[in-house]
Length: 157
Image 1: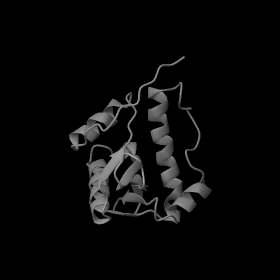
Image 2: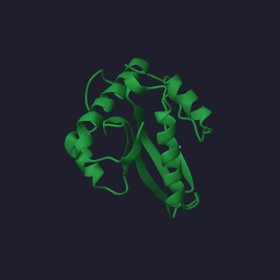
Image 3: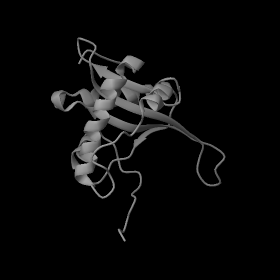
Image 4: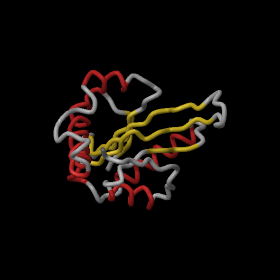
């Protein structure tokens, strides 16, 4: 990995490819919820996100500036709630490393980058969701030191 930088429009095709890779992981774990094919975001939606400072997308690149991973972030601000304190959170909406380059610490570097970014932006915490069936991701986040904040339960009818 060479660097981590803000995503640019030229990165959209590779980001779309990575989104397809992560969709397959989710489909394999929960085919009842996730389709085998489809797009989480259209190219137009990705372009809009690239221009939204509340939804920064960072990419990890190789020495040829090819995207090998991404991390989608969203700022969330809790204010004026009856029982919750006012805090600013950086939420990781999605993190993916190209399957051909996994195991080279790119995911950890993207996470660490987001963690430093959140600190610089005055966030109280960094959060994310992980599907229970995606045990590799759960282990990865636990290894990074993340702790469970809450559980979501379901009963399929």
